Length: 539
Image (tube, rainbow, N blue to C red):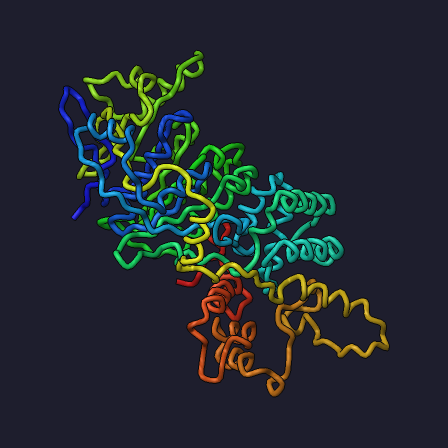
């Protein structure tokens, strides 16, 4: 049965009635729009706490730092008392929400990372602001790495791969196409610029396991995952690409569930205009596809921005649940924006929507949610109800305490740098440059190891070829059984004891999961990529 989530109270005609978001239509997506300082953050907080209370995990980016207050119980203030009396409602049951803090830079939350391979060439090209030709060369680099089982885990892996391709471009030309030295140089410069902005900290292992975000506490409340984004927002492309990657991960790897009584997760995309600014047409088409289809995975996506016109029409048409705070019409252009925003609502014959948008006060909004049959309700004017958690930021000491007691404390804090493309390529270059009388043991021919013809380009193999008698037990298991289990044995032999996997080691399990996604299928040499280029797990 659908659960009504109280969001606002309407006082039309001196009568108070609830404006509820129905839980079974919450995965039909929505948007929260309005000018700065009109109350969008409190609306987001009320919605997030309502979802948490019914057991739905939430992800949101905290661009100002004030959403961290959701981790603490609220309290009655004179201003709050005045609002409650005006609405004619009792004070809420003041309570905190279960919260997990995350931070790409690892300062205000648990570190969150992705591997270069998992991000994929499309999103990475968007992050680096590459042109079409440079994106093509980047795609070739990923393709060659994928074909040869080379793990691109962090930025140094990609740099080594690009350098190797640039130095040996002629060897790859007939099979993969031209690899321009100028494009290689442009990508390397873009990686350097990204590193100066702190973007390199996002790439590496252990990679974020989205299952860690989709948790409930002992009381059945969904965890609210808050990404500290005040510093991240200074790099808009990194911010928008990171959130888009998370959407891609949810879309590619969650099973189809159809229509459910409540979402499996709700995703709030704050400062949504950054996602669409200067985005190429092909990326916009893929974003539209993800937004349209992720509903069937049980995920609700809510875009938060100043004006609904910041969102392309193809995406805006998928957003059935609307909360519109005030827009100020000081110029003719602003007036046109207000009129366009008013036309996105189902009309109310008793309400001049365009006029009201400019009259709304702080904490007041025009609201239209889907009804029990999935139809947009006529727009209503209402006051957002106060949240039960604290409004405003918490202290650094409170944040540290919450992080120390988190369910993922200690899982992501220590970065892991295992053998990957960088080590393989540098090892290959060292062998190629070794003198003829060197004591370095000979290495098996790459072409034979990969089953290639002698005319194909050679790339450092991900696994050296050994006789069966000299293979370790995990490697021998790979040769006998094949598949992911064998590949994992070769890559993670030190994690396996004599009787099996050490299940209780969270860090090890995270590494193994990351390896499964990175290595792919067919003994680790075939990688399947999804709509936005991220790696798909085998269903």
